Image 1 (cartoon, helix red, strand yellow):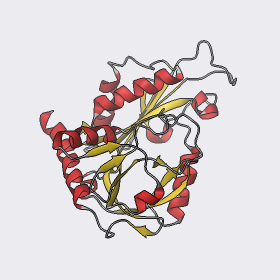
Image 2 (image 1 turned 90 degrees about the horizontal axis):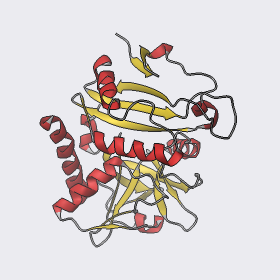
Image 3 (image 1 turned 90 degrees about the vertical axis):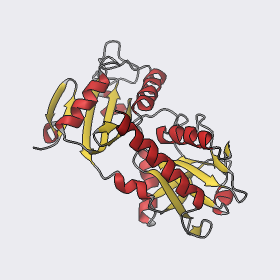
Image 4 (image 1 turned 60 degrees about the vertical axis):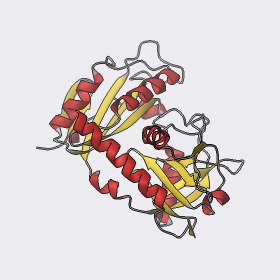
Length: 286
């Protein structure tokens, strides 16, 4: 059985899924999205993703395409139909179909599409180290909204890929690291303090970031939300990134400069274990 997509109320073969040519997501990137991990057939941090989707829709004044109470059932049906044990669900909501005009249409119906695919998440729990590249942050002024307008992120990710790096960390005009193209950035300072940028309008408040902060606070690890520079990151004891599709991933090199001793640090290893337990506990409790 092939993959199944959801398009505006219908489950259809993935290869036949399509939207109207005047969908505003296609013409204006006028929409938002979420990516949710699936582990052992269960959605990871489901409520956090739904809360963020609600905020994104509100910020762009887009209505819910289906009732908020109905959406979780649709996602579970996608898991069932695609036989996902470990993987991800991608869902996208756009303002809908309307004659092309910059102003919001008066009566467009919000559109919902979803896809799902298998992916090895157990492997993420090993915390495979990666390298990152720094680039200028030239995105629009509201990256705190999880909008589908991601061209600057794609260009930065491609630059990192061409340099043999896993991710690009973006740097604002004042020299502060904001975040990765699809992840949040963290360091452990020379004196052992865990640091990540505060979730303001300069970054997307990652759901893995939110969950890890809660785990850190419970553990008693000293933690600070503040910006840090590229220079500070390069001189840090440890560094790592977080995201739905990476969990907690050690960063051992920034711009070809080794971080610490060039290996996964002790605190990062602890946090990988914390988050792994967090993911597993959700399936055990379900």
